[in-house]
Length: 401
Image (tube, rainbow, N blue to C red; front, side, top):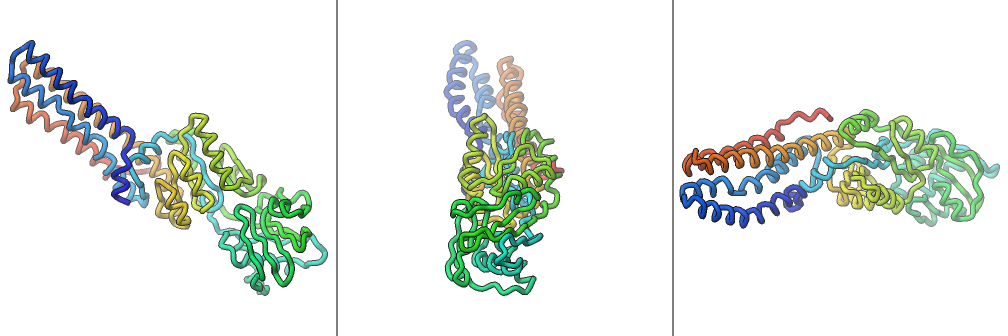
Protein backbone atom coordinates (compact mmCIF):
# COMPACT_ATOMS: atom_id res chain seq x y z
CA UNK A 1 0.00 0.00 0.00
CA UNK A 2 2.91 2.34 0.75
CA UNK A 3 4.33 1.65 -2.71
CA UNK A 4 0.95 2.40 -4.27
CA UNK A 5 0.75 5.68 -2.33
CA UNK A 6 4.16 6.74 -3.61
CA UNK A 7 3.20 5.83 -7.19
CA UNK A 8 -0.04 7.86 -7.12
CA UNK A 9 1.43 11.24 -8.00
CA UNK A 10 -0.53 14.40 -7.39
CA UNK A 11 -1.35 16.46 -10.52
CA UNK A 12 0.82 19.32 -9.27
CA UNK A 13 3.74 16.88 -8.93
CA UNK A 14 3.21 15.63 -12.48
CA UNK A 15 3.16 19.25 -13.65
CA UNK A 16 6.41 19.99 -11.81
CA UNK A 17 8.07 16.94 -13.39
CA UNK A 18 6.82 17.99 -16.82
CA UNK A 19 8.12 21.55 -16.36
CA UNK A 20 11.49 20.19 -15.25
CA UNK A 21 11.73 18.02 -18.39
CA UNK A 22 11.19 20.88 -20.86
CA UNK A 23 13.13 23.39 -18.76
CA UNK A 24 16.44 21.61 -19.43
CA UNK A 25 16.58 22.34 -23.20
CA UNK A 26 15.34 25.90 -22.57
CA UNK A 27 18.15 26.46 -20.05
CA UNK A 28 20.67 25.00 -22.49
CA UNK A 29 19.62 27.46 -25.22
CA UNK A 30 19.65 30.32 -22.68
CA UNK A 31 23.21 29.51 -21.56
CA UNK A 32 24.46 29.37 -25.15
CA UNK A 33 22.89 32.77 -25.85
CA UNK A 34 24.50 34.29 -22.74
CA UNK A 35 27.89 32.86 -23.69
CA UNK A 36 27.62 34.25 -27.22
CA UNK A 37 26.88 37.69 -25.78
CA UNK A 38 29.35 37.74 -22.86
CA UNK A 39 31.94 35.10 -23.68
CA UNK A 40 32.34 34.70 -19.91
CA UNK A 41 32.68 31.05 -18.83
CA UNK A 42 32.52 32.05 -15.14
CA UNK A 43 29.06 33.56 -15.66
CA UNK A 44 27.89 30.47 -17.54
CA UNK A 45 28.99 28.15 -14.72
CA UNK A 46 27.26 30.38 -12.17
CA UNK A 47 24.05 30.44 -14.22
CA UNK A 48 24.21 26.68 -14.68
CA UNK A 49 24.06 26.27 -10.91
CA UNK A 50 21.03 28.55 -10.53
CA UNK A 51 19.09 27.21 -13.51
CA UNK A 52 19.16 23.63 -12.26
CA UNK A 53 15.54 22.39 -11.90
CA UNK A 54 16.42 19.98 -9.08
CA UNK A 55 14.15 21.70 -6.54
CA UNK A 56 11.12 21.17 -8.79
CA UNK A 57 11.52 17.46 -8.17
CA UNK A 58 11.61 18.02 -4.40
CA UNK A 59 8.94 20.69 -3.92
CA UNK A 60 5.96 18.31 -4.15
CA UNK A 61 7.14 14.81 -3.05
CA UNK A 62 8.54 16.05 0.26
CA UNK A 63 5.24 17.73 1.08
CA UNK A 64 3.18 14.68 0.15
CA UNK A 65 5.37 12.33 2.19
CA UNK A 66 5.11 14.62 5.22
CA UNK A 67 1.34 15.10 4.77
CA UNK A 68 0.66 11.36 4.40
CA UNK A 69 2.77 10.68 7.49
CA UNK A 70 0.93 13.42 9.42
CA UNK A 71 -2.42 11.98 8.36
CA UNK A 72 -1.36 8.49 9.43
CA UNK A 73 -0.48 9.81 12.90
CA UNK A 74 -4.03 11.19 13.07
CA UNK A 75 -5.58 7.83 12.17
CA UNK A 76 -6.12 8.64 8.49
CA UNK A 77 -4.73 6.33 5.79
CA UNK A 78 -4.14 8.13 2.48
CA UNK A 79 -3.41 5.91 -0.51
CA UNK A 80 -1.50 8.55 -2.47
CA UNK A 81 -0.66 12.23 -2.85
CA UNK A 82 -3.07 12.40 -5.78
CA UNK A 83 -6.00 12.00 -3.38
CA UNK A 84 -4.71 14.60 -0.93
CA UNK A 85 -4.61 17.22 -3.66
CA UNK A 86 -8.07 16.18 -4.88
CA UNK A 87 -9.47 16.45 -1.35
CA UNK A 88 -8.06 19.97 -1.03
CA UNK A 89 -10.05 21.00 -4.13
CA UNK A 90 -13.35 19.31 -3.20
CA UNK A 91 -16.37 21.64 -3.04
CA UNK A 92 -19.17 19.06 -2.57
CA UNK A 93 -19.13 16.30 0.04
CA UNK A 94 -21.58 13.42 -0.27
CA UNK A 95 -22.38 11.26 2.76
CA UNK A 96 -24.11 7.93 3.06
CA UNK A 97 -26.59 8.03 5.96
CA UNK A 98 -26.65 4.69 7.72
CA UNK A 99 -23.38 3.91 9.47
CA UNK A 100 -21.76 7.17 8.37
CA UNK A 101 -23.88 10.03 9.68
CA UNK A 102 -25.73 7.71 12.04
CA UNK A 103 -24.14 5.44 14.63
CA UNK A 104 -25.32 2.29 12.84
CA UNK A 105 -26.86 0.98 16.06
CA UNK A 106 -30.52 0.77 15.05
CA UNK A 107 -33.09 -0.25 17.63
CA UNK A 108 -36.70 -1.33 17.23
CA UNK A 109 -39.01 1.39 18.53
CA UNK A 110 -42.37 -0.34 18.06
CA UNK A 111 -44.13 -3.13 16.20
CA UNK A 112 -47.51 -2.58 14.53
CA UNK A 113 -49.54 -5.55 13.30
CA UNK A 114 -51.80 -4.49 10.40
CA UNK A 115 -53.35 -7.93 9.83
CA UNK A 116 -55.84 -9.47 12.24
CA UNK A 117 -54.31 -12.91 11.63
CA UNK A 118 -51.22 -11.99 13.66
CA UNK A 119 -50.46 -10.45 17.00
CA UNK A 120 -47.48 -8.10 17.28
CA UNK A 121 -45.36 -10.85 18.82
CA UNK A 122 -46.29 -13.33 16.08
CA UNK A 123 -45.45 -10.73 13.44
CA UNK A 124 -42.11 -10.06 15.12
CA UNK A 125 -41.32 -13.79 15.29
CA UNK A 126 -41.91 -14.28 11.56
CA UNK A 127 -39.92 -11.16 10.63
CA UNK A 128 -37.01 -12.11 12.88
CA UNK A 129 -36.93 -15.63 11.45
CA UNK A 130 -36.81 -14.25 7.90
CA UNK A 131 -34.02 -11.83 8.90
CA UNK A 132 -32.03 -14.38 10.89
CA UNK A 133 -29.40 -15.04 8.21
CA UNK A 134 -29.06 -11.41 7.11
CA UNK A 135 -26.05 -9.29 8.08
CA UNK A 136 -27.89 -6.00 7.45
CA UNK A 137 -27.98 -3.72 10.54
CA UNK A 138 -31.77 -3.35 10.36
CA UNK A 139 -32.20 -7.12 10.17
CA UNK A 140 -29.91 -7.55 13.17
CA UNK A 141 -31.99 -5.01 15.09
CA UNK A 142 -35.17 -7.00 14.42
CA UNK A 143 -33.57 -10.30 15.49
CA UNK A 144 -32.00 -8.74 18.61
CA UNK A 145 -35.31 -7.16 19.62
CA UNK A 146 -37.17 -10.46 19.22
CA UNK A 147 -34.50 -12.24 21.26
CA UNK A 148 -34.71 -9.60 24.00
CA UNK A 149 -38.47 -10.24 24.19
CA UNK A 150 -37.73 -13.98 24.57
CA UNK A 151 -39.58 -14.73 21.34
CA UNK A 152 -38.73 -17.94 19.51
CA UNK A 153 -36.87 -17.21 16.26
CA UNK A 154 -36.88 -20.34 14.06
CA UNK A 155 -34.51 -20.99 11.16
CA UNK A 156 -36.07 -20.05 7.80
CA UNK A 157 -36.79 -22.97 5.45
CA UNK A 158 -35.72 -20.85 2.46
CA UNK A 159 -33.93 -17.50 2.33
CA UNK A 160 -33.03 -14.95 -0.33
CA UNK A 161 -31.40 -11.54 0.17
CA UNK A 162 -32.57 -8.90 -2.31
CA UNK A 163 -29.93 -6.16 -2.53
CA UNK A 164 -31.26 -2.76 -1.56
CA UNK A 165 -34.70 -4.19 -0.83
CA UNK A 166 -34.77 -6.77 2.00
CA UNK A 167 -35.30 -10.52 2.31
CA UNK A 168 -37.66 -13.14 0.92
CA UNK A 169 -38.00 -16.24 3.09
CA UNK A 170 -40.15 -19.22 3.89
CA UNK A 171 -40.80 -19.62 7.62
CA UNK A 172 -42.79 -22.60 8.92
CA UNK A 173 -44.40 -22.97 5.52
CA UNK A 174 -45.35 -19.28 5.22
CA UNK A 175 -43.98 -16.94 2.52
CA UNK A 176 -42.52 -13.93 4.36
CA UNK A 177 -41.26 -10.65 2.89
CA UNK A 178 -39.31 -8.28 5.15
CA UNK A 179 -37.88 -5.04 3.79
CA UNK A 180 -38.75 -1.69 2.28
CA UNK A 181 -41.94 -0.72 0.49
CA UNK A 182 -40.41 -1.39 -2.93
CA UNK A 183 -39.79 -5.06 -2.05
CA UNK A 184 -43.45 -5.59 -1.20
CA UNK A 185 -44.77 -3.67 -4.22
CA UNK A 186 -42.48 -5.58 -6.58
CA UNK A 187 -43.99 -8.79 -5.22
CA UNK A 188 -47.59 -7.69 -5.69
CA UNK A 189 -48.35 -6.67 -2.11
CA UNK A 190 -50.63 -3.66 -1.56
CA UNK A 191 -49.43 -1.36 1.23
CA UNK A 192 -51.40 0.74 3.68
CA UNK A 193 -50.88 4.50 3.40
CA UNK A 194 -49.36 6.94 5.92
CA UNK A 195 -46.57 4.62 7.04
CA UNK A 196 -43.50 6.72 6.33
CA UNK A 197 -44.41 9.89 8.21
CA UNK A 198 -42.75 9.32 11.59
CA UNK A 199 -39.11 10.07 10.78
CA UNK A 200 -38.25 6.49 11.71
CA UNK A 201 -37.33 3.68 9.35
CA UNK A 202 -40.30 1.39 8.64
CA UNK A 203 -39.51 -2.26 7.94
CA UNK A 204 -42.50 -3.68 6.09
CA UNK A 205 -43.65 -7.27 6.61
CA UNK A 206 -45.88 -9.31 4.32
CA UNK A 207 -47.03 -12.88 4.95
CA UNK A 208 -48.47 -15.13 2.23
CA UNK A 209 -48.91 -12.22 -0.15
CA UNK A 210 -50.75 -9.99 2.34
CA UNK A 211 -49.45 -6.89 4.07
CA UNK A 212 -49.07 -7.92 7.73
CA UNK A 213 -47.49 -4.99 9.55
CA UNK A 214 -44.59 -2.64 10.15
CA UNK A 215 -41.60 -2.68 12.47
CA UNK A 216 -40.35 0.85 13.17
CA UNK A 217 -36.61 1.27 13.73
CA UNK A 218 -34.67 4.34 14.87
CA UNK A 219 -30.95 5.01 14.60
CA UNK A 220 -29.09 7.62 16.65
CA UNK A 221 -26.91 10.25 15.02
CA UNK A 222 -23.19 9.66 15.16
CA UNK A 223 -21.63 11.80 17.94
CA UNK A 224 -20.13 15.00 16.57
CA UNK A 225 -21.76 14.62 13.14
CA UNK A 226 -23.40 18.05 13.06
CA UNK A 227 -20.22 19.78 14.29
CA UNK A 228 -18.12 17.96 11.68
CA UNK A 229 -20.39 19.05 8.82
CA UNK A 230 -20.33 22.64 10.06
CA UNK A 231 -16.52 22.66 10.19
CA UNK A 232 -16.31 21.17 6.69
CA UNK A 233 -18.31 24.12 5.39
CA UNK A 234 -15.86 26.44 7.13
CA UNK A 235 -13.07 24.85 5.07
CA UNK A 236 -14.75 25.83 1.80
CA UNK A 237 -17.14 22.93 1.15
CA UNK A 238 -20.09 24.56 -0.60
CA UNK A 239 -22.65 21.78 -0.37
CA UNK A 240 -23.28 18.74 1.84
CA UNK A 241 -25.37 16.00 0.19
CA UNK A 242 -26.82 12.91 1.89
CA UNK A 243 -27.60 9.74 -0.08
CA UNK A 244 -29.58 6.88 1.43
CA UNK A 245 -31.65 3.86 0.59
CA UNK A 246 -33.96 4.82 3.44
CA UNK A 247 -37.38 6.41 2.91
CA UNK A 248 -37.84 10.12 2.22
CA UNK A 249 -39.42 11.04 5.57
CA UNK A 250 -36.68 9.41 7.65
CA UNK A 251 -33.94 10.87 5.47
CA UNK A 252 -35.31 14.41 5.72
CA UNK A 253 -35.68 14.15 9.49
CA UNK A 254 -32.01 13.19 9.82
CA UNK A 255 -30.92 15.87 7.33
CA UNK A 256 -32.80 18.57 9.25
CA UNK A 257 -31.00 17.63 12.46
CA UNK A 258 -27.59 17.70 10.80
CA UNK A 259 -27.99 20.77 8.60
CA UNK A 260 -27.54 18.83 5.34
CA UNK A 261 -28.13 20.90 2.18
CA UNK A 262 -29.52 18.22 -0.13
CA UNK A 263 -31.14 14.81 0.41
CA UNK A 264 -31.68 11.95 -2.02
CA UNK A 265 -33.61 8.99 -0.60
CA UNK A 266 -34.92 5.57 -1.68
CA UNK A 267 -31.71 4.95 -3.64
CA UNK A 268 -30.24 1.71 -4.90
CA UNK A 269 -26.40 1.41 -5.08
CA UNK A 270 -26.44 2.29 -8.79
CA UNK A 271 -28.54 5.39 -8.01
CA UNK A 272 -25.77 6.64 -5.71
CA UNK A 273 -23.28 6.32 -8.58
CA UNK A 274 -25.67 8.27 -10.83
CA UNK A 275 -25.94 11.02 -8.19
CA UNK A 276 -22.13 11.31 -8.01
CA UNK A 277 -21.88 11.50 -11.81
CA UNK A 278 -24.55 14.22 -11.96
CA UNK A 279 -22.65 16.36 -9.45
CA UNK A 280 -19.40 15.91 -11.39
CA UNK A 281 -21.11 16.89 -14.65
CA UNK A 282 -22.19 20.12 -12.94
CA UNK A 283 -18.49 20.94 -12.55
CA UNK A 284 -18.13 20.03 -8.88
CA UNK A 285 -15.18 18.25 -7.26
CA UNK A 286 -16.90 15.52 -5.27
CA UNK A 287 -15.87 13.51 -2.22
CA UNK A 288 -17.97 10.50 -1.19
CA UNK A 289 -17.97 9.22 2.39
CA UNK A 290 -19.45 5.81 3.18
CA UNK A 291 -18.94 2.53 4.98
CA UNK A 292 -21.09 -0.19 3.43
CA UNK A 293 -20.79 -2.58 0.51
CA UNK A 294 -23.57 -0.57 -1.19
CA UNK A 295 -21.33 2.51 -1.08
CA UNK A 296 -18.33 0.92 -2.83
CA UNK A 297 -19.34 1.83 -6.44
CA UNK A 298 -20.01 5.46 -5.44
CA UNK A 299 -16.72 5.64 -3.50
CA UNK A 300 -14.88 4.48 -6.61
CA UNK A 301 -16.71 6.95 -8.89
CA UNK A 302 -16.13 10.08 -6.78
CA UNK A 303 -13.05 12.30 -7.17
CA UNK A 304 -12.13 11.17 -3.66
CA UNK A 305 -13.65 8.18 -1.88
CA UNK A 306 -13.42 8.17 1.92
CA UNK A 307 -14.30 5.02 3.89
CA UNK A 308 -15.16 4.80 7.57
CA UNK A 309 -12.70 2.14 8.69
CA UNK A 310 -14.01 1.29 12.14
CA UNK A 311 -17.08 -0.57 10.96
CA UNK A 312 -16.65 -0.34 7.20
CA UNK A 313 -16.95 -3.32 4.88
CA UNK A 314 -13.96 -4.74 3.02
CA UNK A 315 -15.44 -3.63 -0.31
CA UNK A 316 -15.73 -0.02 0.89
CA UNK A 317 -12.19 -0.02 2.29
CA UNK A 318 -10.76 -1.32 -0.99
CA UNK A 319 -12.74 1.12 -3.16
CA UNK A 320 -11.81 4.17 -1.07
CA UNK A 321 -8.84 6.47 -1.66
CA UNK A 322 -8.70 7.57 1.98
CA UNK A 323 -9.58 5.38 4.97
CA UNK A 324 -10.46 6.67 8.44
CA UNK A 325 -9.13 4.14 10.93
CA UNK A 326 -11.96 4.97 13.36
CA UNK A 327 -15.58 6.02 12.89
CA UNK A 328 -14.90 9.53 14.20
CA UNK A 329 -16.28 12.05 11.68
CA UNK A 330 -13.87 14.72 12.93
CA UNK A 331 -11.16 12.73 11.11
CA UNK A 332 -12.71 13.86 7.82
CA UNK A 333 -12.28 17.46 8.93
CA UNK A 334 -8.66 16.71 9.87
CA UNK A 335 -8.02 15.05 6.49
CA UNK A 336 -9.44 18.10 4.73
CA UNK A 337 -7.29 20.44 6.85
CA UNK A 338 -4.12 18.41 6.16
CA UNK A 339 -4.84 18.32 2.42
CA UNK A 340 -5.41 22.09 2.22
CA UNK A 341 -2.28 22.78 4.25
CA UNK A 342 -0.26 20.43 2.02
CA UNK A 343 -1.49 22.11 -1.16
CA UNK A 344 -0.64 25.54 0.23
CA UNK A 345 2.82 24.31 1.26
CA UNK A 346 3.51 23.05 -2.27
CA UNK A 347 2.63 26.48 -3.66
CA UNK A 348 4.98 28.09 -1.12
CA UNK A 349 7.78 25.71 -2.07
CA UNK A 350 7.41 26.41 -5.77
CA UNK A 351 7.06 30.18 -5.41
CA UNK A 352 9.57 31.00 -2.65
CA UNK A 353 11.91 28.01 -2.55
CA UNK A 354 12.27 27.70 -6.31
CA UNK A 355 10.96 30.78 -8.09
CA UNK A 356 12.13 33.74 -5.99
CA UNK A 357 15.53 32.40 -4.92
CA UNK A 358 16.47 31.19 -8.40
CA UNK A 359 15.31 34.41 -10.03
CA UNK A 360 17.43 36.47 -7.63
CA UNK A 361 20.40 34.14 -8.18
CA UNK A 362 20.18 34.38 -11.98
CA UNK A 363 19.94 38.18 -11.76
CA UNK A 364 22.99 38.35 -9.49
CA UNK A 365 24.95 36.06 -11.84
CA UNK A 366 24.12 38.13 -14.93
CA UNK A 367 25.16 41.30 -13.10
CA UNK A 368 28.47 39.67 -12.19
CA UNK A 369 27.88 40.09 -8.45
CA UNK A 370 28.59 36.46 -7.58
CA UNK A 371 30.68 33.59 -8.94
CA UNK A 372 30.37 29.79 -8.99
CA UNK A 373 31.57 29.27 -5.39
CA UNK A 374 29.09 31.75 -3.92
CA UNK A 375 26.37 30.33 -6.19
CA UNK A 376 27.03 26.80 -4.91
CA UNK A 377 26.50 27.93 -1.31
CA UNK A 378 23.48 30.10 -2.13
CA UNK A 379 21.96 27.25 -4.15
CA UNK A 380 21.65 25.24 -0.96
CA UNK A 381 19.12 27.81 0.24
CA UNK A 382 16.14 26.60 -1.85
CA UNK A 383 16.84 22.98 -0.90
CA UNK A 384 16.91 23.81 2.80
CA UNK A 385 13.82 26.05 2.52
CA UNK A 386 11.84 23.35 0.70
CA UNK A 387 12.88 20.70 3.22
CA UNK A 388 12.09 22.80 6.31
CA UNK A 389 8.81 24.11 4.91
CA UNK A 390 7.70 20.57 4.05
CA UNK A 391 8.77 19.19 7.43
CA UNK A 392 6.44 21.69 9.16
CA UNK A 393 3.55 19.46 8.11
CA UNK A 394 4.80 16.75 10.47
CA UNK A 395 4.28 19.05 13.45
CA UNK A 396 1.34 21.17 12.32
CA UNK A 397 -1.63 21.37 14.68
CA UNK A 398 -4.81 20.07 13.11
CA UNK A 399 -7.66 21.81 14.87
CA UNK A 400 -10.30 20.75 12.39
CA UNK A 401 -10.32 23.88 10.24
